[in-house]
Image 1 (cartoon, protein in one colour):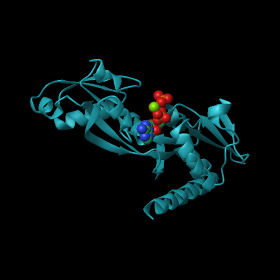
Image 2 (cartoon, protein in one colour):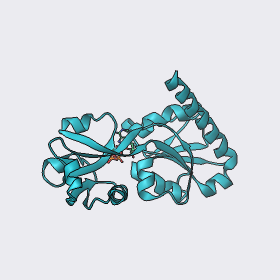
Image 3 (spheres, protein in one colour):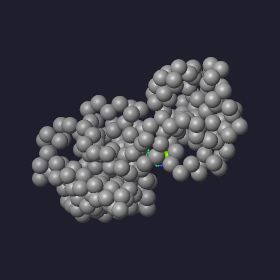
Length: 221
Ligand code: ATP
Ligand code: MG
């Protein structure tokens, strides 16, 4: 029997992937939030879920330590997705990569005057490419979280971060000034696993694809 390992991150990716896996007949036996386990069995003896950091999902799949995984486009774009096959946009964990600044900061004018912007972000490549395309000179400051704080304490003029409802921005008196790209989570598959275990993986991809289409039809109606 081919064993299949699926890499997921805790939080929204796990929660929003569950219904898609259920549609493929896969149900985890434990909740990673309460059990604290990193290896979780499922109702199917041949399918195991591993819990990894969101930004580590592509690494596990690329190296074949997981056969499949769910990763945000933000992570895939930032890291590059060589060696992994991306068959499906799961349309979950949707948000937008944006530039945001303090409400009182005149971004348009700063850009027009050719000022050098200090930009704090976890997404260096994404930010570098965005500002290079606009011809804006930036000093990038790498952070690992709580980007919204940086402009409030004078570490940066602007941030590049994910925004969904905008409530975190509002709570910190920031406003979005540019959309960089729409983000959603993707199913990713190890290419060798797809060849070697295709008989087990292909039906799973197809079931998840049908579930994504079903969700879309629900949203549209
Ligand atoms: P950590 O919070 O442990 O530092 P992380 O920020 O990468 O790690 P999450 O916040 O769970 O982990 O985000 C995981 C993925 O969910 C992101 O890579 C992104 O694709 C998506 N995501 C992040 N923030 C949002 C958001 N506000 N709304 C919707 N999806 C989001
Ligand atoms: Mg986070």
